[in-house]
Every structure is written in structure tokens, then in C-alpha cells.
Image (cartoon, rainbow, N blue to C red; front, side, top):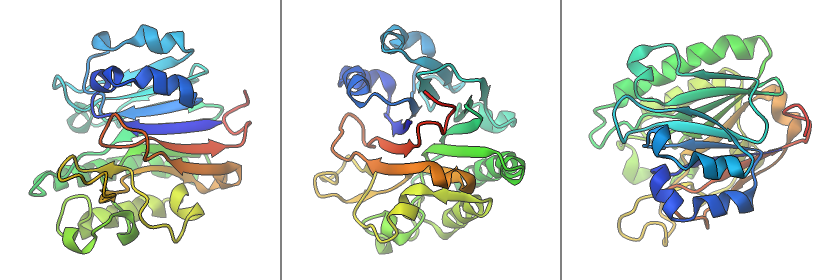
Length: 261
């Protein structure tokens, strides 16, 4: 079972750059997409459905902003949008789908802003998500949180940690909130399997040839509840896949982890 996540920086733009061809080649069982930035009516849903995918979607109140969708080979057992807080949910940042008893949260975390002006809003988002996840994890449910967290958790997760200590996405405040999320009993799968990895990123600025020079950040994650760890087979970051300023990431689980084929 292969679960991908990708911030596409606009679904219409990435579709013009070959998204459907990539989807056919990659052939994920589930794909979490962030920063859709499009109403469902403007999206080539027929093209996705022709490849055998079901679509779960949430868009922001503001046109051309935010939005996430989850594509799955099998229809999800349940779909829930938002976190139950209208102030947060108007930005279209979370859709939860259930697959074989696993709750998959596809999330596009807020960006704290150039001058950190939205960090308080981002902290509220983290707090609400933690409140939603806590009883699920404590009850022993199997949970996956996938998406663009807009936070590099550790110094190894960005190329220039020293120069970015006060930059949104790597401030102490944001990193502590990430710690709180993990303290629920969630595991950063990539870091668990690659504890000493450096230079492996998922986002690069469009400025100054950052991607070509690999001056990047790892801000896209699969976090899983600890009871799913035995099912993990691999995790991959596909930095060579272009079309967005982010790259796709993959979590491979045992075949029966999401209820079988």
C-alpha cells in the first residue's frame, strides 16, 4: 500500500505540467494533495476518475487559496472536512478519510508569514489538530497525518538552520508545537528510518536556483501512530519530480495495512 503526499502549488498549474501522467506512473493507492487553490468545478476530476481514483475535497472560502484533496483507489469508509473550528476551517486545510480502519488526515498547515505575523494562527491550528488527534491516539486508533506542515522540525531538516532561526517554519515556537504533536504518540516515519539523514528536502524556494543547489527544507511529512510502525516498509522523497516547489513523498505500508487490496 503506497501513500503519497504532494503540495502541488496549484492543481491547475501542475496539471498543465503533467500531473495526470505522473499520477499514472506513480500509481499510488492514496494521494494527499495540498494547496489545490481551485474550486472542484475547475479541476479535471474526470481525468483523475478515469485513472480509478475517488476524490475527497475541501476548498477555502477565499477563491484561489489553500485547499486539499485526497485521491484513493478504494472509496473511503468515511470523509470529514475541517477540525470543527469555523475560524480555521474557512481556509480549507484538512480532510480526513478512513481506509481499512486507519484515519488519514490530509493537512495543509498555515504558513507563519514573512514576518511571522501568522504564527499565532498557525499555533491555533496545531492546538486544534492536537485536540482532535489526542483522544484517537489514546484510544489506540491507527492514525496517519500527511501533508505540508510548513515546519522544519530539526536542524537536519533544512540546509541553513543557523540563518533561519528566526524565520517562520523554523522558529523555536513552531518546533515546540511539532514536539507536542509527536508527544501524542506519533512518529515522523522518514526520520525514524533515516535518523542521520541530511540534505534530503521536500521544498525549495523558487529564488536563486535553490533547488538546483539543494538549498531546501523538509516540511512535508507522514506522521503515523506508533501502532502502525510494524506495517512500514519504506519511505521515499522524490526530489527529482518537478511541477511544484515541493516534491512528492511516499509512505509504503504492508499490503493489508489499509484493509487489503
